[in-house]
Image (cartoon, rainbow, N blue to C red; front, side):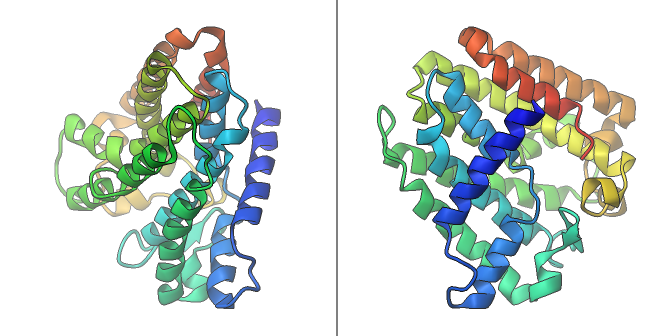
Length: 290
């Protein structure tokens, strides 16, 4: 798995460098800031899932590459805006000072805005097939908007300091974290010309994987250090955020992560042996420490 992850990350990084304007292009501060955030050491898990889903349904990953890069641009934009003082107010991301600490809040906001726009420009490079460019761009837009990623972020902010149920927390994270993960997988499967049955399997896998991913994030926030995580630790506790450890305790949260991962594995049954790479990625994410 480490070799696979490293190789796919290299491919994605090369593509991102190709698709995005160079840091020397005017306005230089903006393009430098974009590249600072994109190449600050992210694991590229969402775009890797996109490529893996394309492979899992029987296709070569190449058609999914622009879609994978578009997903990473949206993910990075969301992190830039999440870290702003008006949001999570974090000083560290991926082991480095957050973008607004280096370039100021105005450039950080605009860099995020630019990455969101660039994501759709890159997605439009997808050549299409059974699922046309309009279909995949629509998927990406819905995952990024008020009914998914952004709406989930708002619900997360509104839940701070309140007592909510596990069901409400699950609904938040299906949007805030799960939607983009699920969409990354769906886009990869579409690029691989997935059948309806395979697309349903990948979708169910993504929903469960996204929840497991967020539970593990919540656990790591209270069990790891800033040096390990590459971002501030203990922020959720300080902000009285709704998290799985807060609602279920650490043992309960760990059990929830295992259960969601098991559901993700079960969803892959229609793919047979082709789903092995996705199953291995789910297992890898369950055991991660950052």
